[in-house]
Image 1 (cartoon, one colour):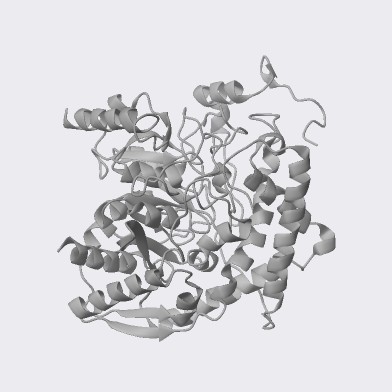
Image 2 (spheres, each protein chain N blue to C red):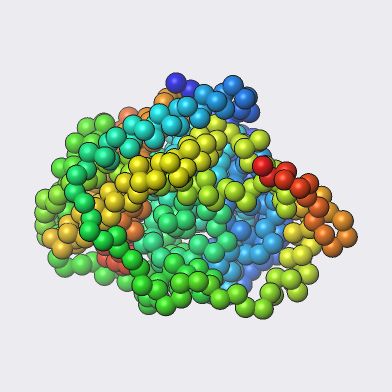
Length: 89
Length: 436
């Protein structure tokens, strides 16, 4: 049992959280597996546009938008954002 | 001048009780230009606070997380654009559960929000700050988002009105998603009229969000004054059995009796066979979609890498979502949950052929004290009555229904998809009873 107040998560706690998450999901999966009724066809929503049409990139011409996006970037150089290769892994 | 005076009064109240005084901690950032902003339109004179996962240009869309602590929105979400076009004034960004992952208002990186209606108790979540801001008198109305109850749950705990629109009624463009197949933006207010008015403004098809439907938006704020002549109120024993605090059931039963007695409406028993599996259906979907949604928070273009700086509940959802979306588990978690989601939706479709609206408690138990130790499953169980509306895509609201031990209790009114008018009319009818 824990309280839900924010705190920094240590590596050890992260491992415990991962195990707990799997345990919760397994318990939920068992519960919904008890539903025997099958659905022959999953529903599909008919939409006029399935994919958004990308029009002219107005955001690139919006100076304030550019300024804010560059302000948000952790690292930048002139007109480029800099990111260490593979840093997202 | 009147508007400027009103804004100043709200700002003074925030100064007095947000970080100091009662220390509600509902507002994370004030709009420095609020006093200069004014406009004409349906929302002229209305002061609005916005949940911190909705983009307001130039303000921080932090999602109450260290991940996006200093992240500024480069554009207005569609709902914000609509509010500004109708003269609404944005007063600030509100606190919330981190990345909308919570039901209590405790998980914010910036500290928990307090409940103005019951100061030691949780305000509910995840739209904790938006609910508390309205309840504390920091603004007229506010915007929240609801994925599994995140508007209705805090509305119930904080003794105000909160509306989750039908899925596809309100654009999600500019909302940082928790679970994109379930999220909806909606209003908080102290009156049904104000909630209806804000909903009327933000609703409507948006070409930037292909999940919005092209439906005509009624003038909800005017329609609510028409009391329906005959309404069949659906009541499900399935909700009664799930209610952990039976006193809540009793309060709701009394409210339904009053409605029937005053307006000549009828009760109808309906069956919602799979509703007891709502929580177990929702969380696998939510975990997987949230995992997918958070891949962009890798710290390269903005913010920090989420896994390195988030709190425990966000991490639980990411790690859980990552695990169950692995190819080897194909069909075991997500597809099973999709199946039961569809069955719950069909339950509601069938029920709404027999009744006009369904009424039940908003939450199955009273809110706990801030900082209490509870398990994740106990936390998730707060959503047992609100999740079904998200899974089935219908509309639902919470309206104050009374108190137990001086703690507010909300009543949930649900209607079929895109029947917001009917839902709001019933809410207004109930509000008139409580005004007497």
